[in-house]
Length: 448
Image (cartoon, rainbow, N blue to C red; front, side, top):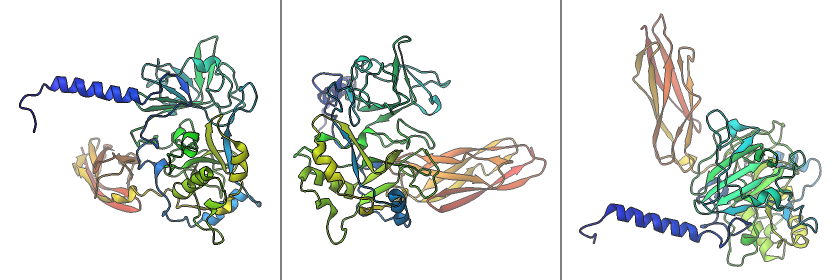
């Protein structure tokens, strides 16, 4: 029973304090830390995120066999673990992706980008702002940045130089590509950078890159030691990041293309380990229970094409506990032919909401005035939202944006229809399309 009197301000303060305490409890005892435990719940991002989808029953793409043949390239491509520990005794060269964990007190710094128009952490003019919580130790210490060399060593032409940072207090993820710290200017530079809220399914805007070529977050797709070799984790609940030598366009969950090679897979394509090959379960080819756990994840969640690189190289974390004498021969037991390509762009959430209608408000305007196209779905949009395509039969007279997004949980969205003055009244047909379903509505444009 609710108390008769409640101080709402006190409740807000108490809830805020509890939230902060819970967030602090998710952080390591000391920060910044390299490769520390990540804030739960795991896997990263919501359960229905593209990285975490269960694709074990997803349909196979009609072109699966030809895609696999392209990967094989006339031979036999074997799976490779692209991760491990130190490559040199000094630890200045490493295998796999390191990541840093910081808390909410870590100062935010500006990063100057080669591609500011597709990066987070810039203002409306593309100027860098204080945004990325980069620990100072990444400047002069090794093992904080991909490749291993400190940030003050310029290896941008030799290495992708990813820097991944998790704010454990706020559950935020920051990822940078091709980073370098110029000691003379005191500035951080990078090719591109992206921000992700670990409690959100928000994707990058269509056509945008991230710190990865596909526009995806990197960290949630890494093979991590704390999952694979942890007996308390019975199921690795996410897909893994994989590279192929060439790509062609992109599909969900990716947002960015980085190639147009005919016959190649698009960014965002997903490979799934078959349940049966020659009458046997390929996940049982390895006797190691931890490797089998990784292989089971390949059957349930698959591999997502996230970058151009060597064929079938699976990305994992830098961790000195990895034993490549186990990993390398075990991964080599799987070949491209042990995988199917699931239907390109498969997204079970998108099918839940169908396009119901498009309406014009108002449906008649004088030329030069605006109307609004309102698209309505049959059900709330899923966690990624629904991207509806718009077209005009006469874009010179009545123009609409190419797309309008119905936000996650919403059933409608609107877009402005801009008209031009006309000397003759005309009727323009505006069309909306979602997953092959098209709805139309007529707009009358009169003489002003």
